[in-house]
Length: 310
Image (tube, rainbow, N blue to C red; front, side, top):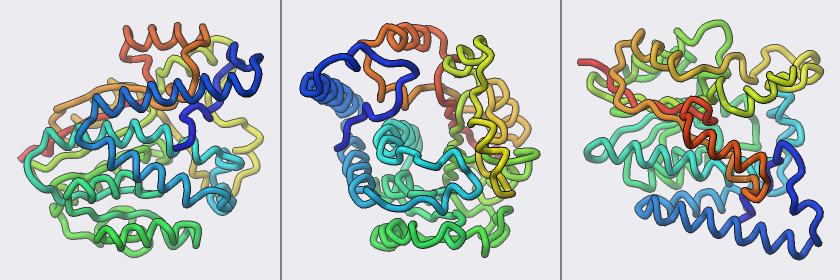
């Protein structure tokens, strides 16, 4: 597996000034430490999630992702390998939430994209459907669609079922996943939430994940007068519709959204994932790690498990 350390740190770390061989050795040891920790903490799902992640990194190595950046210019030259590797932590978080629910579940992954969560759910023994704009994304996702078919995952496209999901049977899923999607929705999240709830069985569960507006890195950038949004020139010249982040949310805002949609909160938590791509030998990151450990409102992602009321 590629190093979890490929994500850019906010500033140069002390190891930047060390010989290359020593830097590589430090990175290898840090990666081992993180992976060993995750393996012990998630014994049931780690091997599956790790293998899916490794396969994604390998199969998409050197692929041309330019078609994805037409409406999301922040994806130009994006480090997808780092994203896949760091998202291992997100996959394990979702797997943990699913263990709170009984039996084999019928799951819909809305905005499934590269399918790492869908594949994990299927390999954990659940029945999985996916929906995304695969026809629009183009051939780059042929690999993903092939993997879905091999894992008996039913594929739907927004072009056929609609963004309102009216093309899917109502109240037919035990669990709906909406991971890293709501922040991309313009205008209002109301329609998205209504569509998610419409296909969720009564007593079914929604797993919602989104970046935390109050993330410590955002706070620190704003305190210096620096925006945490993608560079303005990128968005300024993008094609319409812009599909990057339109709005991020705080914990209390996500709680409010759940309440508005009559979803009973079971878990509302925060955690960080891309943080693990930076070395803890860097003082800035150590301090941030300690701050996030103390203050849950400052962590990177918000995740909720909520039950649809009967």
